[in-house]
Length: 172
Ligand code: RP5
Figure 1 (cartoon, helix red, strand yellow):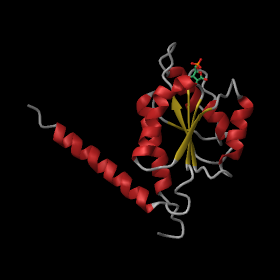
Figure 2 (tube, helix red, strand yellow; figure 1 turned 90 degrees about the horizontal axis):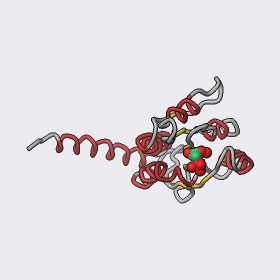
Figure 3 (cartoon, rainbow, N blue to C red; figure 1 turned 90 degrees about the vertical axis):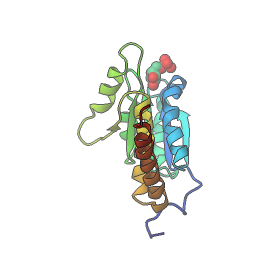
């Protein structure tokens, strides 16, 4: 373990906060939590709405770093202001997941999240479940810059994906 290795010091505290604008987003955002579970990353999850619970959103963003979070994953759909507004109240990395909306299939969510003004970044993933899955992996990759054990688990994950594809390439 190095001086900057986070793996042992706070392994029991949530390092990633997974939030979403509605309980209805859970079907998508659970994919992020599944990846964090798979990679052994402690995380918390909750519903925080930019429009319906704005004070809760600001409190969440303002307290995130002091509570020990290192990365926030925020999923939202439609007029998807949650990731950007959270990013405006913390300097933690914020990863945005555009939820696939019914009206516009998530294009609205994607454009709402990705088009941030300069200076307030949101790392925007793709629309829907793949984006949520990648958000979990991206959060783990960020943490792995200071966690050698997690880096090893990520390398094993990538190797397994490669081996699975090679095995499945053997067609009957
Ligand atoms: C956003 O509005 C949520 O992220 C959700 O994707 C969308 C619709 O919310 P519900 O009306 O389904 O609760 O805030």
